[in-house]
Image 1 (cartoon, rainbow, N blue to C red):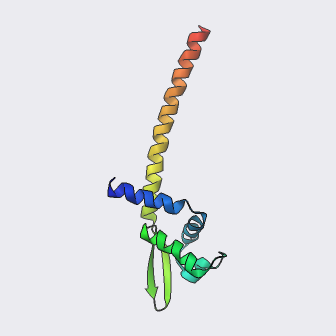
Image 2 (cartoon, rainbow, N blue to C red):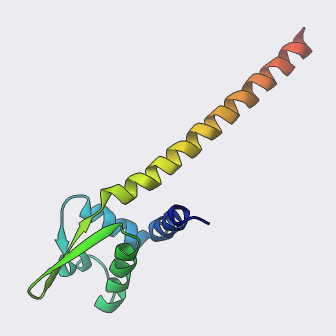
Image 3 (tube, helix red, strand yellow):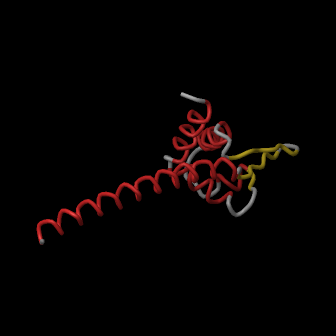
Length: 113
């Protein structure tokens, strides 16, 4: 398995969790501190930070530390890679379904004719 495939696997693993998706959604509106990101979630801060660490490890977010405050930002480039993969899959399946539709249409026409 190539490095790009492995990276994409990590991205989809991260996206599989609703808490991490909610974090990404909040970051889509701008950078936030750990405290700001954790506020709406009913979980201990160390558990929440584990989610942030996983998101950072798969490059969906980046962080910077200023004094005692760590601020997170969304890395759109990695999300775009996942979106591109899904677009390629959708195009392939639409083509296959169109081919199946055409085939079924010819069968129907043969039965009607």
